[in-house]
Amino acid sequence: YRVENGLLVLGDGWEAEIAIPPEFLDVGILSSVPAIVGGNQNVLRNIIANWGNKVGRNLSLEGYSTHFSAYCSDVDLDLLCSIYAQTMAPAMMLLSDLKRSPGLLVRPRERRFEVGCEYIPPTQHLTSASTFFIGSFLAVWEALSNGNLSSIPVWFDEKSIERPLQRYGYY
Image 1 (cartoon, rainbow, N blue to C red):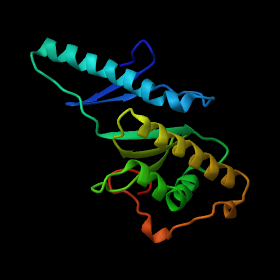
Image 2 (image 1 turned 180 degrees about the horizontal axis):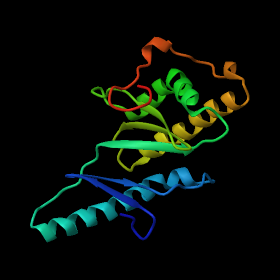
Image 3 (image 1 turned 135 degrees about the vertical axis):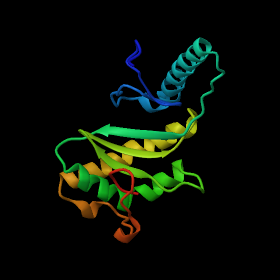
């Protein structure tokens, strides 16, 4: 359901997740990311606690994954995802994945570009990963929009990119 502040709370069995409304990219917004995410996690914690009280169970909340997304238009989203996976994904993995991680999920969504990774708690680490996500997305989007893919300096072997078995996108 949708909470008063626009937060979308989704449930699937014993799993729950939040989708935070889009934020306009503006000066200072990235340093606010931990507070925005942390505040919305607290909303979900309260919803879970209240529901647990109603059903007589002690429920807890722990992170599983983090998804970054950016509105995207005027380019082929699938091609953008493929290029991102071949260029920026390895650096993004260094900021967001653990040793046991299968890699990033890079996928097109309706009018959005999305990267899914390990859960990143709302700390300065999340600010760093958010900053890199925005900058790397804009670099690939601009290169693709301008037909200047040679402006992206590092490319990884296309054979190292896989299609996920359970979801659409690139690993």
